[in-house]
Image (tube, rainbow, N blue to C red; front, side):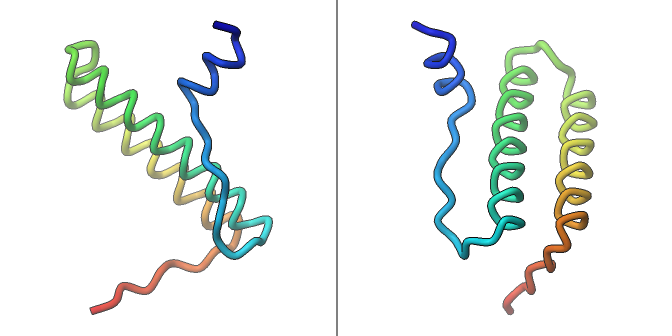
Length: 82
């Protein structure tokens, strides 16, 4: 298996299908990376490689980074529908 195939397996990216704006595409890529990292952290915690507290801290930091990215791209917050 080549390095490229390994990377595609470990870090799959799906094509963006929403309203095409550079900001949306960039945020989508960051969101996919966030999801992959959270998945890895959860797996490490489940297998005893990280404590629950450390996993929580790591995910919280990733979340803060994602929020900062959204704000820096000047994307509006979604309105919650009741």
